[in-house]
Image (cartoon, rainbow, N blue to C red; front, side, top):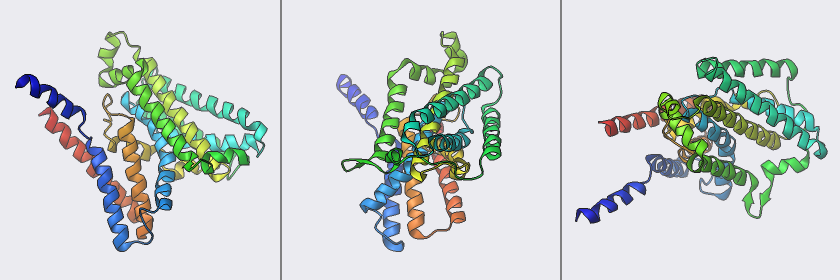
Length: 327
């Protein structure tokens, strides 16, 4: 009997649905019920579902990159201002001219990778706490932005706006972009040596180093991934707004909300445990809540309080379940 039941148990554990997906389903059903009873509009209408995807795209892309940083035991508070730098510089260089798009993409990608490299070097070589290092980098970017631009700068050509408003058949391009970034992130973490080393370094950096893993390079690489994801987000927002402005990233609170989405999705802040799919579930929860609050007519201040309570409750649930597993 034991020879038969043991594999069955392993299969059951393998296919067990993570709690974050049950939480996502519960959030959707509760939102649907509340909007049906007290709100305006149809929560399951196609337009509403597309609105949820639209809200999830920008946060979701930057949160995928943030997942890499947190998995190695770091984080990145500079992504919000890097998003603004990307959007402003891209639209400023393009000036509505399609022929200038490749130059703009090359410049903002170089800027993003440089910021990620510097963040990684500050954390690994200078041994500065990631919170302080990336916050300082964000403040530098903020100062450069505010000294150079005050409002919308330049414009993106109509062909580039396909990134935000186009579609391939019935499928919106933002959804395809979102799915491509998620798939790439999940594939890297699950199927590549770099991904395996990220988990090893996040789990125990000293042990990883003794195993021959160049931990500093992995941390730097994770920060460069986080910055590159912020660049993609900035390009998407520039396409959506048809231009870029210094307030795009900070007003979206993409630094703090991306970290919150990663943690709500089950990735441990200390690193070593978690993944992209859980992060996306956290992002979708935030997007559903945003749409629900709007359809219920809840004010912005109350909305922030409720979202904070939900984040605290979700993290508390994970902490409780972790203690149960250890116990």
